[in-house]
Length: 265
Ligand code: NAD
Image (cartoon, rainbow, N blue to C red):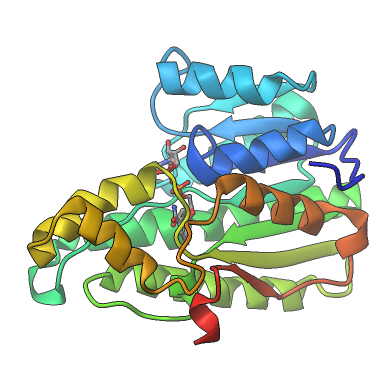
């Protein structure tokens, strides 16, 4: 990550950062000198969480792990207060944790709707609300919401995900306007398909729902992405690092796509 961005002395909290995109963002921040609060499900003894602590911690900055469940508002608030208690400030917040469920609306389970709205949308409201006062106190703030091409486009069978991501894109703009005269920026990143565990998990369901093989499902998914390539988590990390930098101070209320041209269509 040779962007010459220094986040030395800055404290970042990245939700859902024990795997996939969140872990790559956390690693990019730590490499640039930030102290990082990791978050995900499970306990600090789980292999996936131990690996995240080791990999993100390899850059020599302070790295900790808060295993709070963001589906609960108190979990989201707790994540921010723990970060402040442990590291002394909260300068950068990345709302990345997310989940997906694929089904037509008539068969879409109510509890899946509630969970996806809670995690992919409401959790960001609670973390941002709790973090903004710390950013104001520290005189610096960066909020980066990981949305999706589905914050700008719809696909069938993803009613909760598309609704939540459109909502998160709207929340990004509102908070950007509310903080526009302060040293705080609020932006969204909207990836297309990125090769991560979330995508890997969707492929069997999608193949089953279409009656096709998993290889055919992968090709069909990439059909939406004109580059015909999955994006990589590190590429999202590089953009998040830039948005967290001093150079990005006049960028606020934006929604950056990293989707191989999907939403240009
Ligand atoms: P992932 O499944 O690899 O990782 C999800 C992370 O969220 C893990 O750390 C997990 O522990 C954590 N998590 C899950 N439920 C949680 C909960 N209730 N409380 C706290 N943490 C929880 O995900 P990913 O593919 O890296 O996706 C990350 C984000 O990027 C999501 O918001 C997703 O919607 C978005 N996104 C992903 C893609 C893609 O192709 N992978 C594309 C567009 C947008």
